[in-house]
Amino acid sequence: MGITVETTPNPRALKFTLEEPVGGPATYTDAATADERVAPILQMDGVTSVFMTANFITVTRSEAATWDGLTAQIVAALTKSFEPSTPEV
Image (cartoon, rainbow, N blue to C red; front, side):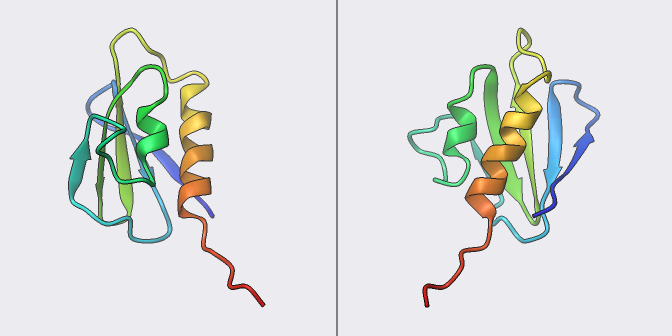
C-alpha cells in the first residue's frame, strides 16, 4: 500500500494519504477510545491527536516531539492497520 506524506500549514501536523477510504470524520486524542486502526499511533511518544476522514489521516505531535523517526513509525502502523486482508483459501 502506498502512503503519501505531506506537510500541512501546522508544522506540528502531517497528512498521511492512503489509497483507500479511512472513514470518519473523527478526531481522537486517547488510544483507549480511538478507532482500533489508529490507536497504535496514539500510543506513540509525542503524538497528541489523530484526525481521519476521506482517504487521509492527519497526525499532530507535541511541541517537544520531532518528526524524525516518528514519521516512519506512523507509516508502518498505517500500513499494518489498513493493508487489505487476504481471504483464506
